[in-house]
Image (cartoon, rainbow, N blue to C red; front, top):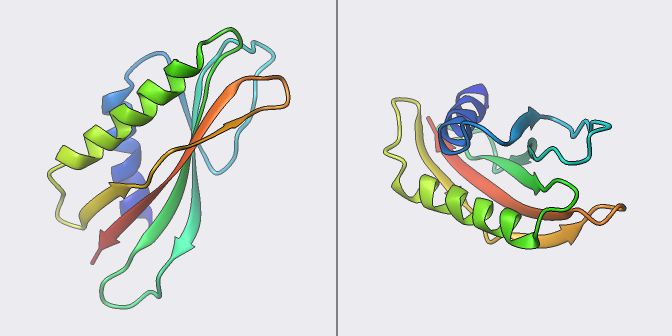
Length: 120
């Protein structure tokens, strides 16, 4: 799974070089509620056979005062980045699911999507 998570992180860092904090495993909020986060969490996948399919949940959390379109646009950027991602030696595919809207308790916009992978 580490190859898949490393590949996903590399795509996210290339897509969002500034303006978003990328966290893995859990969301750790900051007192500065204007910060934006991308939180990647592993959630499992199909059986670990010859072809492995790790699955991740990616949450985009906007800063206080951001329009909801900020997370929507970011989700679209991830979908597009994964659509054209060329693959690597160990990770053959990264594919995003359809983003779903939610909100935090304090009203910040959250879009969550699944990302499936195929590794060998």
